[in-house]
Image 1 (cartoon, rainbow, N blue to C red):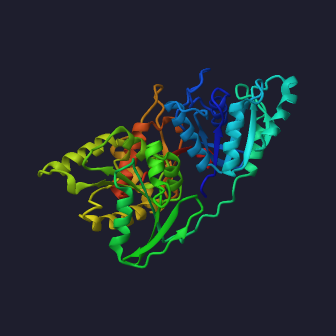
Image 2: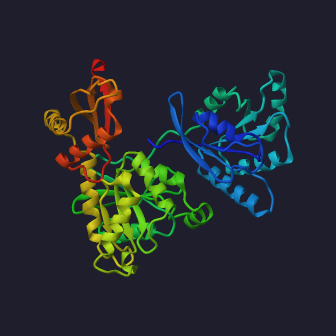
Image 3: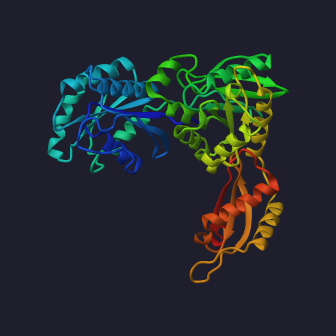
Length: 439
């Protein structure tokens, strides 16, 4: 299931970021009593009752020709375009302003469901003022206080009631779903086209239910695949990438629906900080990953060039040392034939299940070679037994005497031993410690 999207919009300085922070439970957005502090969109996952959703905080919408204001408005408009439901924040103490009316007109044109958060209503005697916001004609107003967390439950109940039912195209368990993520101009669209053009098989388009996205199924060597469009290639792709540099939300949605994520790098330009941030989304989501170095044909090479690039990737993506690296050129099709076999391999690793007795043999051998750690009082970690509880990603539970004794370094040691024994190329592994008496 793909999470729906709730976008928080409104003119500057009405408390959008305060409400955003309150809903996600942490101070992720910068809050300052000064217009224009939130200049870009900020994303986070949020949950209310049984609903999980993406939350977008935006810069204030203000109708002006000043460059910064134009950029903020463009960001907010893109957030509205991506959203399933919009939370329109207004200042209840100030009442309706001309800027509020302009934002309301923008929201009416969007034809999206809207709930109005009438903010800064800490004093119940002010609640009667909220009824004037019905005149904006965009949705039901709710009195809230972002700073104190008042009234947000009713607001979220209403917002979640507008979320669409998940209706994505479903594929059988044997189909490998692939998405491509990466910053603009690394060649994601070219690589998709090269993959599909290379196959020379029947290709059909099945419309996805995320706006502007199209899933493209194809078959190669009797294996079924689906390429999930992450870049808006068929609609407004250039607008999205040039305006917001990189559509984080689209990547997150695509990653959620994927089995395997191709992290595409520009071999000619090299690695930049944004590459690491983008790749982190796939790692955190627990998806299988292949790092693809595109445009390798344009690189001036010596006999050491590939090894040097591999070393740079491993140094910059230390948290993803399990991911195989494929060097290719979407333009010339150089080494393109190597990609899908690697995708299939990491997909198999992602779904690999290990028998409990075999897993315990590996854990016992690892503990014998390197005994478990002790705390400052001399209490030693004791691993009673272990079992694999799920796949995609492979997740293991260790039943121990005290979960606090399983330090990160020893967990990493056990992970390395599991990888040596069973492979798990291209997939993250999760190891959880549980007190034996909880079993």
